[in-house]
Image (cartoon, rainbow, N blue to C red; front, side, top):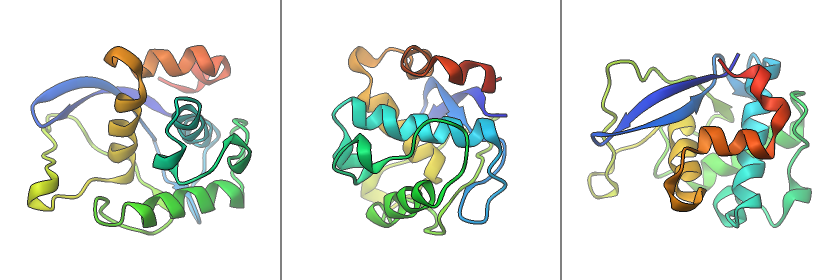
Length: 150
């Protein structure tokens, strides 16, 4: 089941979403985790950030249904390839992060890299107008997602 947790990134704390197990090519692909990743990519496109995801429109994304598909796998892999200089690995998988008692350091100047889920968190935060809590905002757009997030 996906989780809502406090993330500290460069000493700034904010709520974020995390997967419980891997999502993507060869991953565990649990329903709640898959649904959350599907919703995150769609949320970005719906908030004028298709260029971040690397797609042209919502039609290029899978539906938010919690079922893993090759389409989602391609979106994840293409996202990682697009940001290969920012992510830790380009393996087609989104791995769960451990944010407990951590301050994730990130600066494009020092060539630091993030896990894919953490990069998605930063993009979701940027996409949400007036910097409100995107973990609440995404539930307004994808009401069925709420039962899958702890």
